[in-house]
Length: 349
Image 1 (cartoon, rainbow, N blue to C red):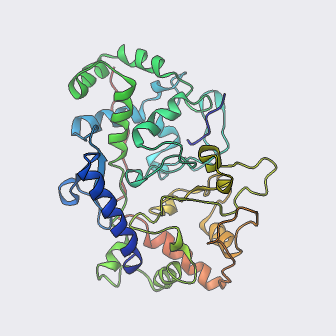
Image 2 (image 1 turned 90 degrees about the vertical axis):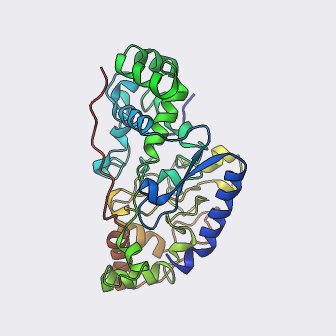
């Protein structure tokens, strides 16, 4: 869930270079460690993973994080887990406009996928978390999500022998909130989706995409103007944009502005990855669009006019055939051939 707390080719060259330069600078500063693609099984089309130097991944830590991710005992009434709102079977979202938290409470934002969240610069729709470690602890404490204090969840998990033993092995301590965040983040960094027909096409497999999808790809990087924001290997610029969604509502969600305190960020939300986008309906931060056809039509008409509309949003004047081809590229071209369909593990007792 993502609710505010209450109380490919030449087009990628510049972004990829900038990403590599940033990663190199962070490595030099000792801020992150890099995982080699070949050694760690990073899918084709994606760059190596960088992770915080203070939270290097290990198989044991990842397994612990997976258990915590699927465990509803992290919520007040032991009914809601991370996987309740970020379900592997539903594109690591939940196939609903909004997610349901403890006591049947619903927020006003769609559950963003965690697919390829390892590459995100910011987390949550409004970017209020700077790391996966920080993000992992947010929903636990949110009163309309899991509604649990960190002290409460630590006390509860320390009474479970299986968790106590694992935390001692992985972190050398009893259960701590810091350890919970680190373990879940380590697991989430393994949820990677690449190796799509688009990636195969880029490497010379010209029959990997249908003719319609190839036309859609050309539109994506050209007339459709999609790559202005959905750029790079993960098809996101990791920035925030007002595309008009929800700006005609009675109570407008101000999005990034609440975090940045900048008026120009009003109604701006994080650009999501388009990897495996066909699995993650409904779409947009408010889950207001049920299909990719609706999404394409929204952009085709130039969004919803408002004083803060991003300059990259304008009428596209696409024909029906062009709209259909663009949807075909999104559905066919960006769907992973090896989707990370993680199953719920046996939970500690």
